[in-house]
Length: 88
Image (cartoon, rainbow, N blue to C red; front, side):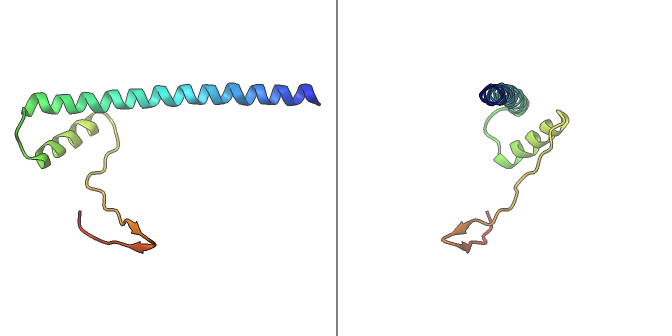
């Protein structure tokens, strides 16, 4: 019984390590794509324009890279259990 318990723990630990590595790799690749898109937008437009223009161009670039994007997502925050509906 002890041997089986050790093997199960070892398998769990190995799978957990593998999952962590896959997750780190995915997050790094995703971050690399996002930053690359942001740099591309800045190279094309340059500095000093309205944030809304950069946002639209960044959304376009991200979608071109095959990423699912939502912009200006509405949220309803809770404050002490009360919904605080407000325009952002």
